[in-house]
View 1 (cartoon, rainbow, N blue to C red):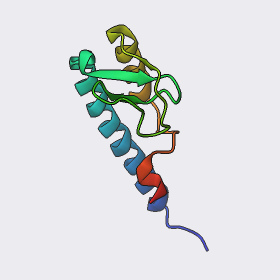
View 2 (cartoon, rainbow, N blue to C red):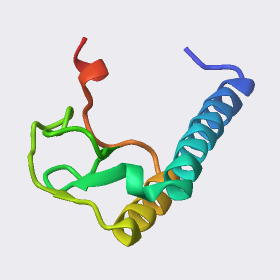
View 3 (cartoon, rainbow, N blue to C red):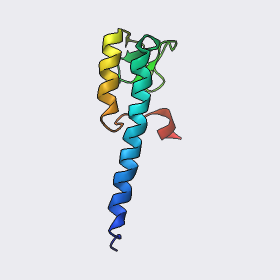
Length: 89
């Protein structure tokens, strides 16, 4: 079965929309990096108040604002690759 020509365009639009959402989240993180930290187990950005990473249960974090900003910029430009709790439901 062949998909209509517009089928590929839908996927591209969904991907662009998804990356746009990630960019918005990254912008929020970049504006207040002191409220976030990076899990050293899975490289996820989490809020500074958590004791363990909700994605991998890691407990080692890098809370330096410079590292948080750099990681936010990196994650904003690519699709999610880690498995998160919502993926397991």
